[in-house]
Length: 148
Image (cartoon, rainbow, N blue to C red):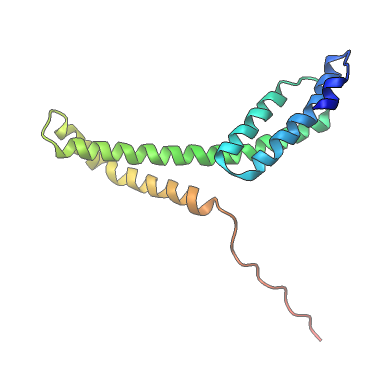
């Protein structure tokens, strides 16, 4: 950063190309961490880098690669949010159905119609986020032994 602040740039593209490595250095380890708060901070730096219109084609490819990595974490977070919302919705419907109020009948009907599908969706989302999106731990078969 110090070296960058001591340089003078006469062209906006030159400044963009000089700023990109700084933003990349800040973003890459945060994205690779896999921890949601750090990934969010890394995404912030990527969004800043996206605004640099004068970066080279190689820098553009690097930026796109990092954005692709972030897309997985964003999708995973959105699926987790959806699972939580479905679960909360079912809990609220159940509460409304169990109390004597003007919505109890409608809540019971909704639970009857959407309850099984919503529970199946919730379980599918849970599996997708917590099981299937983790690291691949399937054992790799050893190569065949050489024949004499």
